[in-house]
Image 1 (cartoon, rainbow, N blue to C red):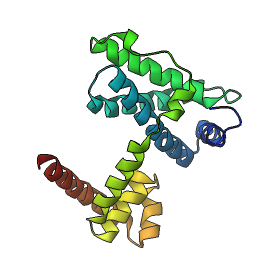
Image 2: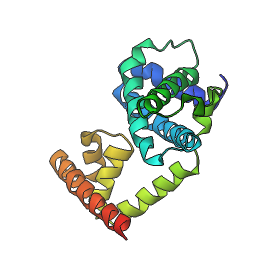
Image 3: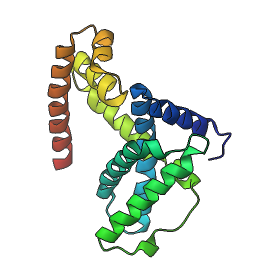
Image 4: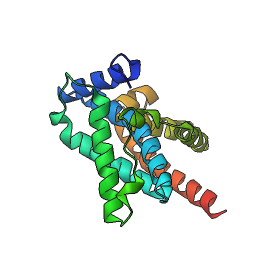
Length: 188
């Protein structure tokens, strides 16, 4: 991703705002990066002949590292190579721990991280949309606003015209219901 890329500029702006303490920008940055990282790790794990179930663990590890190391990012530099370095390190470390060949992980350009946000991320959001549609509207909106869009409970409560407690309860009950729905689908 080049310096002039709209996505690179947007992600850099979110990181810079995050470094300045803007929590909403930080949540949005991590949410945006999660899709790219998911595609990147899924593709690399497939190349290394590994189970795609390992993808989510790697995404979470990378996001945690990005969160913990955001103070080391130099705002005058591109963000993509910095994210790529973290993602690649996490992947290699994971493969080493699990006894895979590190040579199975090809050295590519940092733009590979951002190129990896493939259709499956869109498919998962479609699947999530279908699952959320099975829940009562206020429950589904509470989950969408807080867990997907990254709003605070207070912001979600204002949008849903509910109390903060009601939003928290909706999220708790809704996630339990979603878990049960997913379990039933996986069993069939």
